[in-house]
Image 1: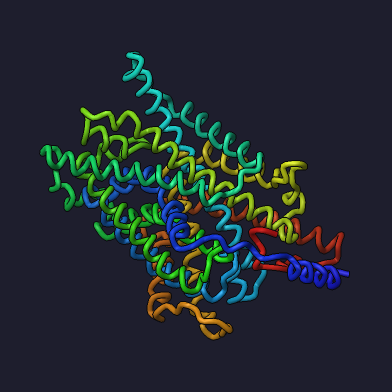
Image 2 (image 1 turned 120 degrees about the vertical axis):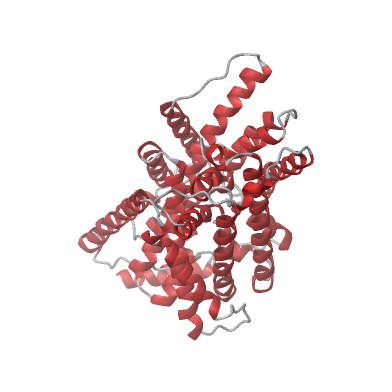
Length: 481
């Protein structure tokens, strides 16, 4: 009975039309840049400064190098298998173990939730700053200092609003992403402009840019690797572009040049922003609070009205990150439920709106739990980086394993040394020897543990009620089953 069902589904999948190829090089570049820019640089710059002091730019530069090396593995795989399923598909083709495929897909989903929770905390901090601008600058009232509890409430409310938008059926739109990308990019260019302006006014202290300031119990090497594991959060997002492979004209030709260009643009912006930040604000002060770049703008151009609108720009930037990640997370969960590797109830859709309401509610509940229990941006952002670094380690290994498999079209081929170096670098940054906080491992293990429990429940139900195995019938359709 199950064999017939599987065959029928396979035939239906073959009859379904493919995704429309609507993206050219320019749209793909904007998508990649927009996906990388956002909460990372807006939220973790201060946390990175706490670890290394004035050389805050160095962890961002190293994180860029590791991401760039890993991008070569992604380029080989996405041009070899131009399907919208990403890391889970590559792991399935390389190892053929359905449980491993599931773990990788669930880890990617969890990274989206932790990233959205990080964005929610950053949104709340910038909302507080915007309220104070309105009260003090525009209305002449006194500033307010929100308690940590109220900040948490605001972050939770923000996630609930994102859930309502998601339930309403807002799908990712490339053209909407262009607008939000421009807003994000504008905010970072403002920071760089303020840096140049302050330098001409003699307000910048570039001597701080080469000063290490590490904790007494950490060597410079450990401090830099700890900071790099945090800064990596700012570089994630490029891997999402592989999910657009089926919607890009000539992906095998377009992807390599555009992905590397997008990464280079964002890497350059991040290094310039971090240098500007430390030149204008001392590391100790930069590391306080959840809105470090607002301090940079205020310090560099106190007489200009830029600081009055910067919190609003930051809010748009982190809101875009949260919405994209919660959409991705609920869609992945829905796809896995539809393939019956997770409880089928998670695949239920809302009548009329046709949105996966149970998956949305489940991912929202996880995000709310992270915001209230974990709270701190450094822990949430660090967990996001931890999960994705583990995924990237596997992707680099997959690139090497799949070298023995040939396809009937030309594709990009990374130099053999790069997947090896990338895999080792990502695996190193995952380990506790980097000085990564134990809390991040705890959060990651709890999230993955929830997935394993759901898989086990589904496994038992599938065997007891349907006499079928628990496996991906179409691993290349995980995200849009």
